[in-house]
Length: 175
Image (cartoon, rainbow, N blue to C red; front, side, top):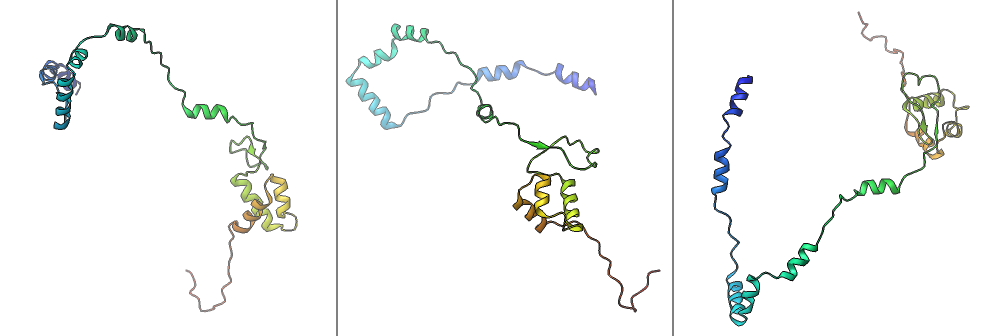
């Protein structure tokens, strides 16, 4: 397999494509509109010195051109500028609650947020002990806003397994 690659590189003809590119006819300027040509000819006939001015070099302008020095630097991207301007103070955070975080590498949780495990724990505690784990106590314990806790308790529930007794005696028995 390697021999085929080396043979392809060795037999690659670089000279012919270069010669073809050099021998191509150079592109000519785009043709002007006929009305433009007639206006240009009219101006040249009225002012013959224009043709001379176009053809000659102006030493004064050339000296100005030689004095021009362009020093360019890469522009600073707007993302970096915004990042420098909007540098925020570190947010307050708290340690995770419970011993079940040893498995997961969670060092701290920002105030106003909870982890999935904490959410399941507080939902389960609220379901079991509604008198002690009220929305106010949960908000205070986990540093959450009251309206967020109320929404959490209203719209999210933990899984619940309910087993209904068989009331129908004629049900098919499993074998």
